[in-house]
Amino acid sequence: MEDIELSNVFDIDKILFKDGKIVINNKKIQFYTPILRVPFGLEDYYDKKIIKLEFNNLDNKISQHREFYNLLTLLEEKVKYNLKLGDNSFKSNFIKRENYNPMLVVKVFSKNDRLDCEYTPKEENYLETLYEMSKGVNVKCLLEIGNTWKMQNSKTNNMQGGYILSVKKINVI
Figure 1 (cartoon, rainbow, N blue to C red):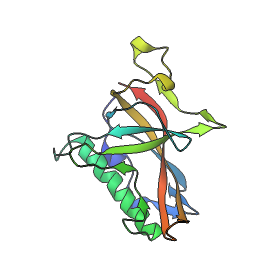
Figure 2 (tube, helix red, strand yellow):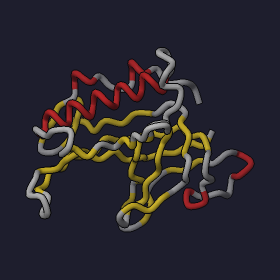
Figure 3 (cartoon, rainbow, N blue to C red):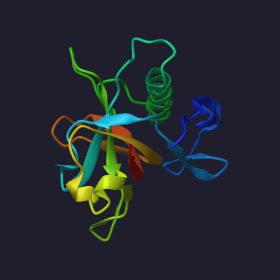
């Protein structure tokens, strides 16, 4: 798979918010990631399946990881502004911890309680399924920006919100 040209991923200035959807030209936004590491494999999170994609080399000003990270950070700022939420009320798709590389949490697409994500393992592991994906593999994924959400926290009475980022295809590199 070839490297992606990040300027062709999507134009942040063309993003529109319509009825809880994030669109460009009235279409859902899909784009490929650069090659990222999956440190933990497929995980359960509140009855949903997720994977975490690890960024590294963010200190390098010309790395694809840095450019991609910055693009998604701009997207989150735009969603936060659109939902009229502050930093403490916005549910980021990033996990940032001191002394660790940031990770992007993406939901694995599913329909009728079945995973609906195309998975291509390395050629030597051609029988491997998504459920058997190894920890620490490098992948290139097709992601889709889903709907925004906003709700009132029943414990604090504060508004919270965010957006859904799903993975449609995973190619193990």
